[in-house]
Length: 121
Image (tube, rainbow, N blue to C red):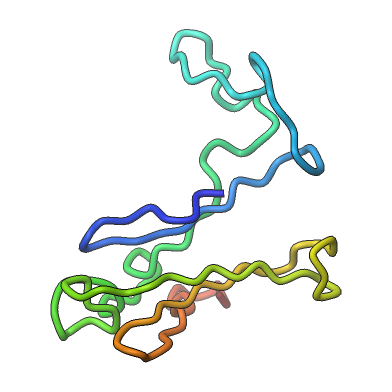
């Protein structure tokens, strides 16, 4: 899980689903080899590319960036909260949703849903 990939004009969080359960220390090819000559990048136990959510790329052009024209103004301090929700609301339940919130100037700002047709989140 890439919790925070960002700069002053772009942000994303990326889930990298894996074929193993729980904590796992990979070794060798099962880690996904980035050496271009081996063609083993996608042989690992986790999805190397993952599935990210970037508001701008998802069609929300005014969410994150420098200045008052953005819901999250990156010229000011803000806090990011990432919530992991499970099917039974316990620490051990199956993960069913990841939510992102921003807090700036005492205001809670929910991560926007995608504006791309066919995607509901």
